[in-house]
Image (tube, rainbow, N blue to C red; front, side, top):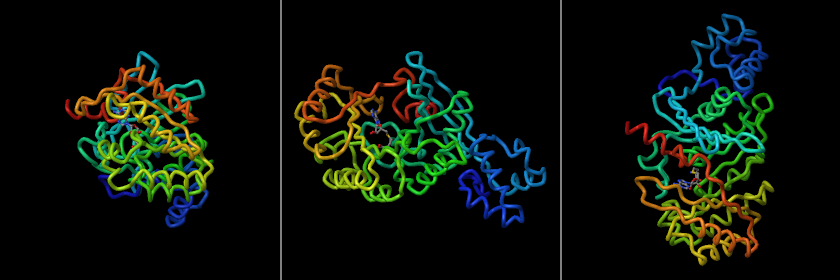
Length: 346
Ligand code: SAH
């Protein structure tokens, strides 16, 4: 965090109550503080006018108040998507994306600065992991964007930079705070967490009693092919991943999403589609297809539109639910991690 003060925006209501008690304050102060931070989205203790000046001063001395400020905002001319580059308190930067859909506004947030998973097509992992994000720093991406756009956020997807399940405790705390009735109260059903497939954490997540959607990044339907694209496939086989996916559905009743990025000449043939259909046929799931977003350093090309459609048709013929994901903000470095890289190299 770059400082030793306690991070007050990462605390749940119970923790805040204990803090107030220890400070000799009435415990209802905790609820007031909590609402200022998580409902009214205050940017500073100074705004919290129903707290005494003394308490506000004391809070400022004792606690770190996490706020993210935008370094850059890019707006797509095609679809109104906005991409934000935020500066963290230690000078690191993260990316978040705001997307406007008919059914509401969606924010894609980052869970780590950098990433250590090493997927071959991804820009976020090129320089490895810098550090995980605190719950407050994940929340702040949603809060700052709500304030900057002046519009309510209804969906949150953890699909930006980083592997969320590699930052497990902070992620789960973030989800509980984000969906808490005393905060923004975003519906758990409108929260999606995307993972490259960390099996033990997927199983643990199934036990949390959360109603969130789990998205699994597959990108290949054979272990051999997947290992070439995603180093994590050397650790967990597709068999184990399908087991963890079935378990997630069994425990939560939530249908899974499988992400499949189509890469020209790598994973986009009819045979690939057949293998995918075969692999997931017994699961209650939905497939999202997206032509891979070319990343300068990576050298992969997206499959041609005709191949994407053929792949989709093949899956559908085999009884799989599938959508081709609309590419949002292609003209503004839509692929996660690209805006930050450009900025670093400036
Ligand atoms: N680490 C998590 C979430 C972050 S990435 C995960 O792996 O799921 C969100 C999605 O974008 C993942 O499915 C990821 O594989 C995919 N992705 C990363 N780089 C991409 C690119 N250049 N083109 C298309 N999809 C990409």
